[in-house]
Amino acid sequence: KKSKGKGAVAATSHAEPLELGAHGSKMAHLVQRIRDTPEDERILVFVQFPDLMKQVADVLEQANIKTLKLKGSVHQQTGALDEFQKEELEKDDARVLLLLSRDESASGANLTTANHAIFVHPLLTNSQYEYEASETQAIGRIRRYGQTRLVKVWRFLVKDSIDAEVFKQRTDAMTTAA
Image (cartoon, rainbow, N blue to C red; front, side, top):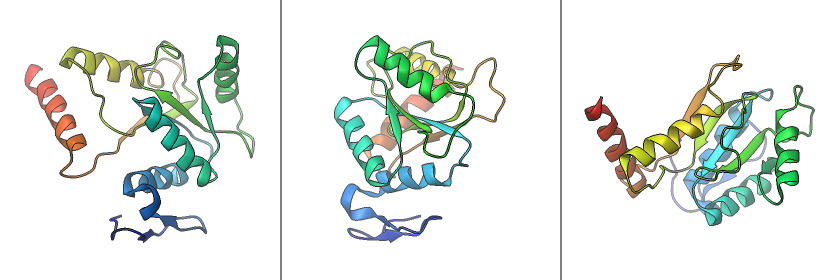
């Protein structure tokens, strides 16, 4: 769906329309992607910067999408992971886990109850090696032994933007190195 400028509205599969002017089309499309994901499927949303994570959390809260975040003490983080990992989702359970893409707090965590990984923006790293390692680690949290669902990776890029340029440079480097 394309934004028609500030204040444009995109159609949704739910009753309430998305206001694109308030947070931009990328955030509106993120909300839509989550709403369009089957209710019994869980989603990891990766962001790189704490201020962007706050913005994403605020947008999802405004859209009435319940999320979990890894923050606080180890005990609090474990509680959030346990809640996210429980076998059966109930009606008001959070099915979205927001993660800082380069944060060590969930490194190695088996999050195979999720089968969608959303990258809000490409990872900014100092090297190609770091980029590939960080992305592999992020996707590897859901794409591992025990995963029974098809894993889908979503990348949100704005055409003709720095996001698109960074992503193109990194993926071109991966294909030429192979």
